[in-house]
Amino acid sequence: MYEINRRKLIRSGACASLYALLCRGGWAGRAMAQSAFAPYVLHVHASGGWDTTMVYDNKIGKSTITMEPGASSATGAANIKYIDHADRPAVKTFFDTHGSYAAIVNGINVGGLNRKHALKLMMGAVPANRFRYTDWLSFYTFSTNPVMPLPHLVIDAPWMPGDYSSIASLLPSSLIDTFANGVNGNLDATAESSLTTFRGAAFSKLATNASAKSLDGDKLNALAHSYARNAILYNETNKAVATMGDTSADPAFVRNGKLAVEMFAQGSSQAITLQSGADNEWDTTSNNYTQQSKKFQDLFSGLNDILAYAKTRGVGNRMLVIVSSERGRAPTLNSQSGKNAWSYTSVLLYGVGIKGGTTVGLTDDYLRGLPIDPIFGGLAPSLAPMEMGNIMAAIYLKTNVPSKILLPNHAPLSPIISSEDS
Image (cartoon, rainbow, N blue to C red):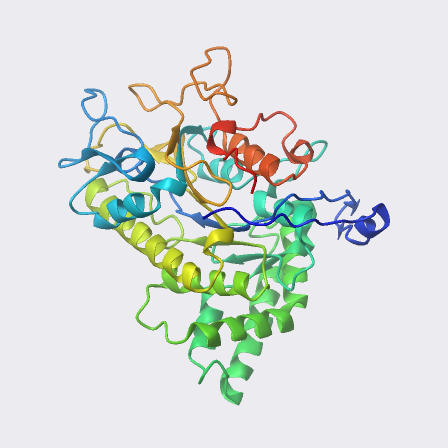
């Protein structure tokens, strides 16, 4: 199901130079990879930090870790292991339906409890000989197939395009609402005028307040590129919304996910980042189980709907989905029945190139990530705990992206990658 034909991207050195990107500090002209295959990548971000013990990391029976009442061990398709609960039927549906193409990675180190720093480690890396972060998907898109109207589209989610700022475009979901309120995807004159005014005002405000918001030059440059691409953004989004039809009954996450699928189907984007819920919504320092359970149910229900939609649009077998959160939750409850932030998290992967039914990574009895051999997946005491960089190095390896540019010190986490030729 997840085998696709190889796409030979034959580029001479002269052609590659045409794609060099102008950004702060000079040209970032690096030859792009000749990719064996380039799946569409959808990165779903759960902002604030999820409780990994409620779905991914089984700690039932550990006296040092407070588990949710009613949680039970479960096995999905391809024998993938997860945590089941009666309040989260969508989780069971996902792993029963999609477990053969899914992998879980536990014990990912996010470098501490500081959310801003953790977010940077989860969303991107500092390229070799650079000091600024570059998000995974901007670099991925640059290295595989950047000749698209909106190569890396970001919908209400964090971004840090760094040296690859001309690749990324920002699409607030409020703009999608404006398109969706049009008739058959066409805006009337009043709506179109309002949209133009909104976009101009939004960019002007961001530019004016860049210093106060600690908005670095790279991100401001990316916003400038995005704003310059407004006409394309307008046309491509309007076309996608018109094809989607009525999504008024869909939650925002599902609507945005369907839009991402349409962008893939119409050849507008190679990679899209979107967010499940509002910014920092998963930071449950009180009433942890009730809040997290609903969020996981909504997340997996949304994923099930988005993947079903992708199948109808003919791109389901060409997608790679990465679902992550920048932090985890602490092993035990606090005095408000919440869980404080934790410096280890889990990642869910699904789709083309992924070795299904796989669970990799270990945490100890205090939810601290243990060092894992990235080649074989077993315990390796001499190594450091895994980071998101190990996961992305594996994806880059599978897609023939030059990972050493961005990740010179991260070995690919090989057990999550299918050995089949894709």
